[in-house]
Image 1: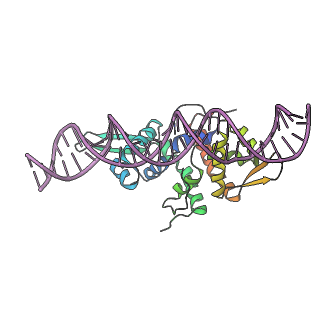
Image 2 (image 1 turned 90 degrees about the horizontal axis):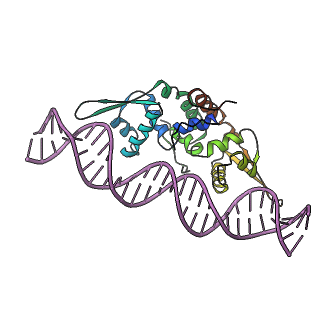
Amino acid sequence: MKVNNEIYDCPVTATLEVIGGKWKPIILYVLMSGTKRFGALSVRIPTISRKVLTEQLRELESDGLLIRRQYKEIPPRVEYTLTPEGQSLWSVFNEMAIWGNNNRRVSQK
Amino acid sequence: MKVNNEIYDCPVTATLEVIGGKWKPIILYVLMSGTKRFGALSVRIPTISRKVLTEQLRELESDGLLIRRQYKEIPPRVEYTLTPEGQSLWSVFNEMAIWGNNNRRVSQK
DNA sequence: AATTGTGGTAACAAAAAGGTAACCAAACAT
DNA sequence: ATGTTTGGTTACCTTTTTGTTACCACAATT
């Protein structure tokens, strides 16, 4: 999905512009539980390629939903943390989770 | 987005599998206000091609979110109506609308 | 001296999604 | 006879998104 700073007619469209797509919701969902390193994200979302993970993280950063912290260490360490704006998406994901549990086939453990 | 009947690990992923993508949220949002004919949907979402509109409607139908009613008339008349399951997405869209209004640039009228 | 670990990037390929233009039926109005 | 109307379908093409593979830096460890 394209990222831009248009003015939207529809607030739902505006929201989906930043959280929509194949990977962003899962990335955000994983980060809801706290700061994660690049490698940790990769482990929790094993089916995403590192290239695409990088791209999606950069877009989420430029949309103000997370911040990227790079430590000057060798080997490198990079941490991703949700901004308050990113965290405020919790209620959206919560509704989606409720709906999914009630209406789709979701594995329970 | 691919439609299937997998069992999902994540309820958010399960939800986005059926409402995600470029057009489905807008289609569902428009249908929230009641039954619409194919042509009416096309008018309210002018930027979607008829081919893609047809495709998306068929997917939403096979996912159980709406029903398609075809009347045996000439010229043809086809109406699309949300199922109760489709209507129950209202709370999801509502949260997205709230977030979009609070955090993105949405034109107010 | 070679290997490991981390977080990438570059070039390229494949797949998915979306768009365009032409065409159809068949009743009705002109 | 011709055009209009509605809700499509089909073949083809372009754009967008996602994936694959190889490669890099450089300190610490073996």
